[in-house]
Image 1 (tube, rainbow, N blue to C red):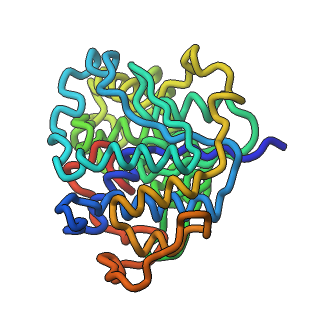
Image 2: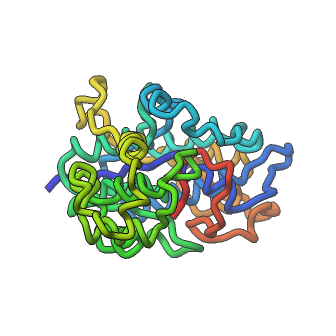
Image 3: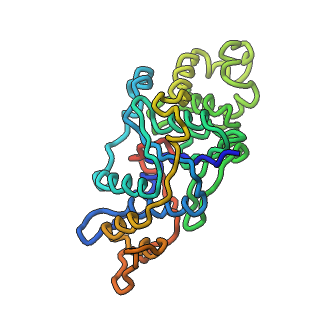
Length: 323
């Protein structure tokens, strides 16, 4: 059995970290809230899932094929807050120090890379994200992990949990989301179809392909008029929401690309000192040069727990809407 593969949807968790705790700065006035929470996330992952295979996946800008389908795709997203933008280089530096390969590819969103790696890799796959689009990948081998509130670790979501959440199994989730649309990605849905109706439609009449090709199946039902003429928008939405599964050529050597290194605890400690994350420094394994400074005040001593507290999704999120 191959060691489990851990894939981290980077910006999903970076934005979550940024909005989980606000107004944290070091003595130089530099914002450190996202760095602080994200470091705790990495410590939690290292403790609970010390796998030798994994990667942190980043978006590489908007992808052309989705913009061709919908020029307004994600056009409603505000720019990244400057207070977060300044922390991104440190977050990337920390992630590398924890041994994570940092991967991105033009014409792939992070979700697409997660899909490509999940389909190509052997063995169990766990995707750390709260992005509902990634739930379409869940099956008997692929699960999602979402950081739980406080210091409660991670919540694992398999087929049963995804089905309970959306009232449709993961195999029908593309159709479900295509019917509803996605306001966070600026994808309009089918007018008059809500979450309950979408679930009822799919569970009763099967996947969209069946009743789009055979509209007579909906004759006389409450869905007949609502879906009349909706074929084009549904097919477009399916293509927007469906994740790519073709693996970029340069990532074909999965063993090398997804190989995690052991954390460099000395480097992690150096970064924590530089950013003045003193409470985290006290939690790191004791290595040469990593002695905490107990007599100094800890700017963050009031904040505890390996996971960030849950907060309402922000409209500034770069990734898909949280669920």
